[in-house]
Image (cartoon, rainbow, N blue to C red; front, top):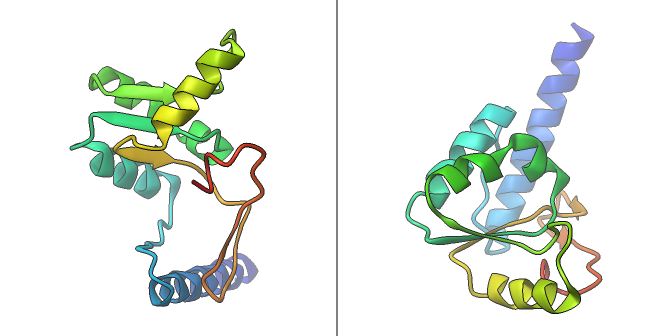
Length: 125
């Protein structure tokens, strides 16, 4: 019973945040499961030629990269090992104009604000 109550409470908070994000001009949805998030992202990427990755551990855990690579999309990943500084910067510049950019937020408030701390500006951009 306690887990059910905690899950319900968390879901209510998430729905509240989604509503507040909408009021602040963001298009937001609540994905109850990682599978729902995975399916939503794959669907959102379906019409995209290029997809940028901002280094989100959550996105990484979903294994989205593998699926999108198999669909022939151009993947812009500035965190790949072995890239020179020039290559990283070039990819980060291209991420600013890619069709879809996948990243995470450091925090999302219940009042509908996103909080990001970003060393280079690609997530905030």
